[in-house]
Image 1 (cartoon, rainbow, N blue to C red):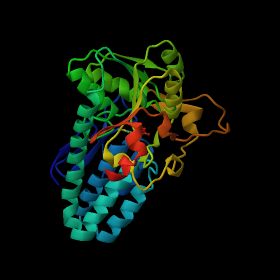
Image 2: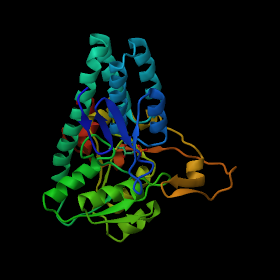
Image 3: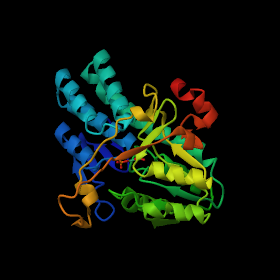
Image 4: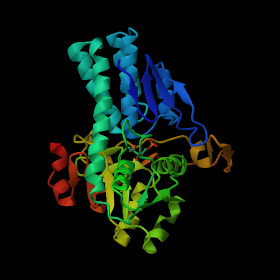
Amino acid sequence: MKDLIATSIKYQQGALHILDQHQLPHREQWLVCDSTEVMIAMIKKLQIRGAPLIGIGASVLLAHLAEQGASTASLRTDAERLRAARPTAVNLMNCLDRMLASLDSHGTATLAHCAEQLFNEDVELCNRIATEGAALIEDGANILTHCNTGSLATAGVGTAIGVIGAAKQQGKQLHVWVDETRPLLQGGRLTTWEMDQLDVPHTLVCDNMAALLMAQGKVDMILVGADRIAANGDFANKVGTYSLAVIAHYHQVPFYVVAPYTSVDANCPNGRAIPIEQRNPAEVQGVSGSFGEVNWAPDNTPVYNPAFDVTPAKLISGWILDTGVYRPEQIAAGVLTTL
Ligand code: MRU
């Protein structure tokens, strides 16, 4: 397979390296991923994360294993195990489906080409999304974003953060409110890091400050990513996205979801049909990362920890995809089933 280089994934000289996102921003450590077991553990620990990137990472690993001589039968089993590692993000399923279709039609030798295509396509999709979305951003805008949707989460410039980066490159003055994104702090740890890299002025806030900011008129628009967009426009994204949409609706702040077509699941009729991953109670009882580990709740405290929530289409102002910006009337007319 050819070398493939992105911000947090590298395939170089026949080895797959992953930037350990669990340790960012204080420690930049690259880890070798050479087996399905390691990739599954990395996905579960969010060392590799972001809906598009986990699909690409899993595909590059399968292609690597094929080059190492893995059989068709074992690659098939590996694909099914990888698929189960993060059930909500449909990009993982879409990428693995494409890899398996390539395996079925042309055998193991074509997997490298298929993984390269998926990687390069994601870079291109991010660029198109950035162009489509940047046109909506007004000079002087205050944008609020949740979780992390940038170059750490994709093979390219990202989705919502890609739009912000492109608007900045166009010379627009921007300020970004970064939701810290409990329980795993992707906003506080990763989006702040990316905003620094992009030289975008930003301010970190706790998730529960968004209502106050909107009431004070300090947010002009909200841009978030997606892990799965259903055919009717409902979408799943990092838990906390739905409450932002409700608050934005109340305060009449435009709320946009930003994603590539690979995050659309045309076979999923609506948000109720999106599977939601439940995660370890320890993530809510405390927090861990490169800063160490702390637990503040008693060990036996009952916890509810869904990784994602679903935002209904009726709360969304626009869907910024690689093929254009879609308005509610177009979504209601079924445009997502024709992409
Ligand atoms: O659990 P994570 O950190 O992988 O969740 C990420 C998100 O919710 C992102 O918004 C989504 O995957 C899109 S990333 C371009």
